[in-house]
Picture 1 (cartoon, rainbow, N blue to C red):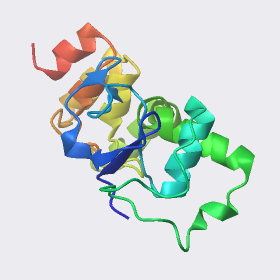
Picture 2: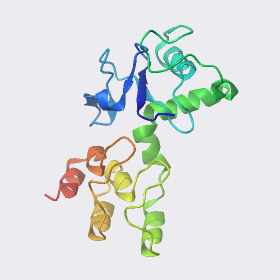
Picture 3: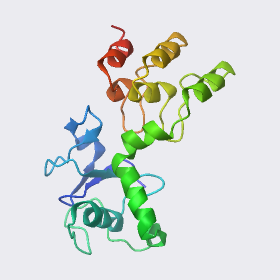
Length: 186
């Protein structure tokens, strides 16, 4: 699976993550470079981007029928042997919701608590260790507007330039100006 391929649930076009140039919602939500709508879906390990998934995403989220086969020039090929068929409607809804909001809200809510991070770091875990979502403790603290925890992590050597799998740093997820200033060293 190529995690750098994205699709739009509004227009059905596919493109590479690097082609996204516009973001909204404090730089947390990508905008489709083809139609300008914030309906971008990027495959995950739990829900790889296939034509069937993109088609269902469009139907679920945008009430659009993208057709049985991808359009000419699509980065996706017609589905032949897809695990997608084993996902029931409720699971698809939850996974699509996670995929749609998961890169920001899902990760923000799924990370360890500050106390769990602190316990692990004080026990010798690398302060820049990344979890299964490729977020470090500093990514979570920034997204949660937690100035005190950001200060605690920075004092222990947390790297504010550490990239996640979307090539975003904790600064990109800073949900308050105060946290952003801390991360920028201002």
